[in-house]
Length: 121
Image (tube, helix red, strand yellow):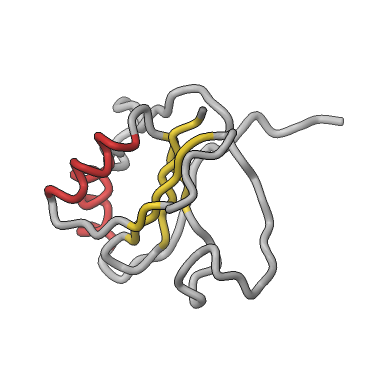
């Protein structure tokens, strides 16, 4: 069976796409989409990607109106949390973390999209 190689992009609607793209760049270090074909897109580091389906009703995403949650791997979750909090971003820490597979924390982007930070074990 032929398989996909991985994610080539994640596309979603936004009320203010330019502002939201800048927020992701300024807070999480994700490069803006280039305006030409010569400039490379954001390249993520190699690592695990979890592709999981959840029940329609789940508390895990926080916001019940959102159909997805972005999970970003981070090298040092404590440094990332400190960086985000210094910019006024509200973080929810996992009180049971760490787990055998790593540490977790959650936040929302300015449009309420849920984000999970994951420092793999």
